[in-house]
Amino acid sequence: MVKLRLKRCGRKQRAIYRIVAIDVRSRREGRDLQKVGFYDPIKNQTYSNVPAILYFLEKGAQPTGTVHDILRKAEFFKEFRVSFDKK
Image (cartoon, rainbow, N blue to C red; front, side, top):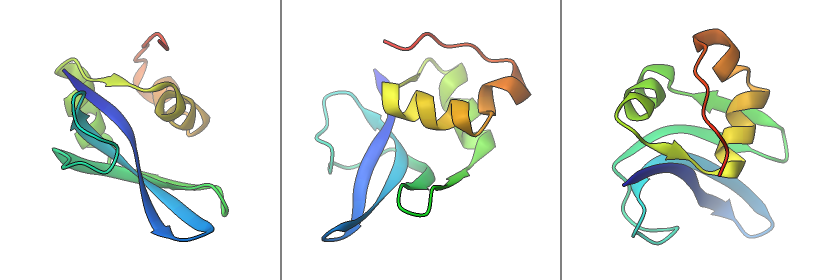
């Protein structure tokens, strides 16, 4: 099963996160299938590769709770009328 989740990058005390499509059995820093965006919590910036995210969601990928909240704040689900339950 594939999930959309965060992968930590950046330096000490200055973290940024990549939103990646990754196999459930992989570690947080493990090899990802594809990078689909990033999130900077300090500057509160988000970048999303919308076609890639839609591709993985259509294939059955589940976003984690945090990624779901980030995409909801970016109004991703309003634009595309995609509804996923947070687990």
